[in-house]
Length: 223
Image 1 (cartoon, rainbow, N blue to C red):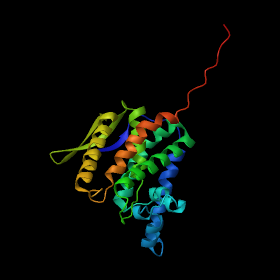
Image 2 (cartoon, rainbow, N blue to C red):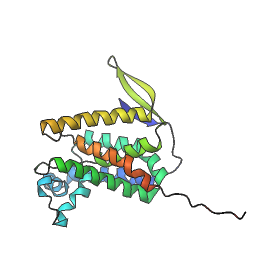
Image 3 (cartoon, helix red, strand yellow):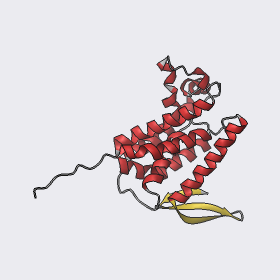
Image 4 (cartoon, rainbow, N blue to C red):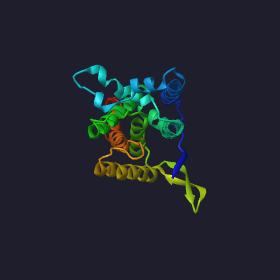
């Protein structure tokens, strides 16, 4: 099941969403072409064993790791989901609040993943946790939106129009199932994918997104 577009245009230019996609692509290009790609990645990736909450400089990777990716497929899939679902969420909560929301979800997702692998030497990279937060917000605000989705049936791709809540619930269940599997097997990831970060980001998006909506001011009339 792979979404290709939603049918509800936000009717607002997604400045921040496009900027985030651009920054992610720029950082990925840097990863590839810097003289020492491994040093570059390790310097900005989140390596759980290096985190020390008494040394603030070791917490920087909770942010910088969000803008690194492990390969072309990793960044393409992440940016595709951000492109499809991010513009509506940005239009709903506003440009400035959207970037704060995105960063909050990304940090929260990485922290949840960190709790299960705090002694790991393996670097964590990717925008998946932040994007999962965007998906959570989309699920909360636009559950009935229709999404064109590719579904393989008997080996052939078919495009079906499905409600967003169905697609996102299905996505969340698969992430949660794999997340539970990582806990039971004590691996914290399956095939290098931080499923717990996805689950945490999605849950964070659902829970906190409402706090990024400022209530409209009511003007009292004269009776």
